[in-house]
Image (cartoon, rainbow, N blue to C red; front, side, top):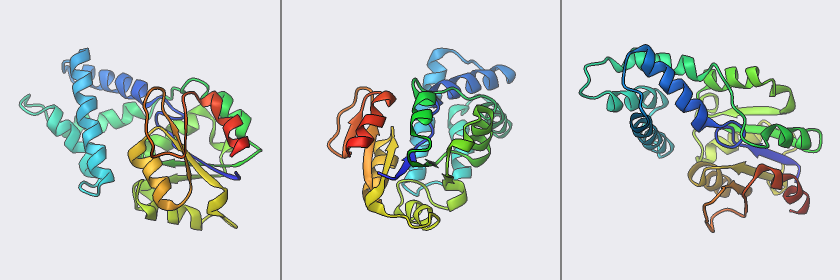
Amino acid sequence: MKYIFLDLDDTIFDFKKAEEIALRKTLSEFKINADDREIARYSSINQAQWELLQQGKLTRDEVKFRRFSIFLEGTGVDPVPVANRYQDNLAIGHYFMDGAEELLSALHGKYKLYLASNGTKRVQMQRLASANILPLFDGVFLSEELGYEKPSPLFFEKAFASIRGFEKSEAVIVGDSLSSDVLGGKQAGIKTIWFSRDGESDLPDYTIRALSELPSLLENI
């Protein structure tokens, strides 16, 4: 392997943790109930909207506001300022997945490393900058810039086209999502590694349970 595409949220960064912290802070600022049940309800709504985005049924801006419109329905609270403030709070902090920092150190210099994310550009770039890991990557591919969401083959085609001498046979994508990372990699014609701590699937070429397993796996593919 020569080219490693890494998903960001829930692969390198712990998005679930970042989401909960940002959401609790935002709801508190607007004096909205932020107990565990409400946090779980929002997370479910949010996941459903991102899946619709991946299917091409919603735009990115629709996702940003629709999730809060659904979440706040019946409360009388305007979802627009809440949605905007949530984006601000989400961009503030970064939280690494277990072993992510060690993984990046182990891979840097041995492979061409690229980030491939459907996340919002402003949020992702601020988090990457605060984590000080941008210098470890040879490129960052964000769906908001490419104009297509994973798993669209067009997301990958545009990314591949920007890499000089790129060969699909030497590339692999690593991510936690079967529906965007693994399916997208399959449709794009590259190898796939699913980062799943407990799930089972025949879709990916390989599965890892911890990020610490990735360096040795890459050496043997």
